[in-house]
Length: 250
Image 1 (spheres, rainbow, N blue to C red):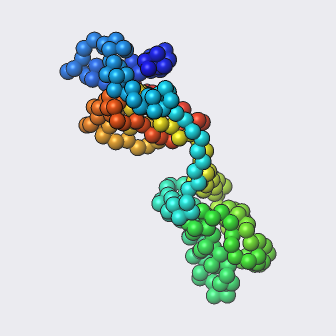
Image 2 (image 1 turned 60 degrees about the vertical axis):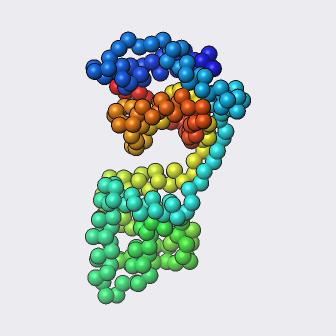
């Protein structure tokens, strides 16, 4: 099994141990054992799982995942307090909703449109579901046709530009909306792994989360990764995005 770990992976593992493992702790500093010595117990314990995986360290299968609609709505709701979104929504409420609400002769359907178009459900659905209608925008009664199925961002952009939103604020909101929608549909690989590096890095990533198993930030229970690695019963399962590459930074 050890022969399946490439020279590059061995160098990366040794770098990881020297940078983040006990050898990097002044109180525990000692010479690093040979690669074969360090992973002898891993090799002996993973024999059965290795055979179950078809004599491979990692089995990969393509996967496609579409986030359920309610989960996407919840994501938009939670992320509305992100600065790029919140700045725009404050402008929208101050410069569009408030003035329209104070007009006595305003078309109630136009006011409702302005409320609905920035709702989480509308942003997640990414299309206007009401029937086609021509609205007349104050103060000059400019006609604006909103068609059934129109993208919310087209409607938002039209109204924001008409009522003087700074392009920088609008553009950041558009990017915020696009980034969330781009994660609705994910393609990648489902991986089942007994590779030592996957155990060692199970809680180290650049996706803004970590656990007590984290090596880079000296998690309290990081030694548990070695216990998992040397257990005959445990393998790693994770989703892999082939386009994403993590870098190690000591």
